[in-house]
Length: 206
Image (cartoon, rainbow, N blue to C red; front, side, top):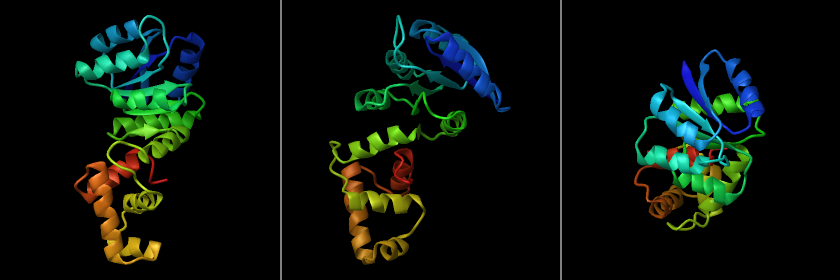
């Protein structure tokens, strides 16, 4: 059973969310909070697996609660659920250690999927969030990942070896090896498995 803590300052939204989650036999809502201060108190006292948390709340916002959870090394996953789809909020949540970020207008089935993926140790982002993160890849400080390199990452995430990737792109195996070497240098990743995980986490496998 996946135990969930809901954190949102709108009672009606929490009620609807709780009802939707209750339809899945593997999920149980064990606590609710209407602001960040309450959330932090419950996080320290309740036995649960994942926090489903809004960003804009009174007294203490979700971003600050997220920061404190990670600073204090509290044992829980955090999935941000927000109406904000701008880059500043999304990247801020990721820098503070969020395990995922989804928008409030996602279907209920996607929310369930997000919770289960995060619990399994993966990151999850709704499609709009994935698009923003993918664009950010092109300008991150470790180097520019070109469109061609993003395509190589996508094929790597699908489990294709160098020969298969070369066939898909109609290039030589040596060219694929060069792409992979460049990507590893830009992203600071030293293995193909690491590239695969990176591509999946940031939605480049889609």
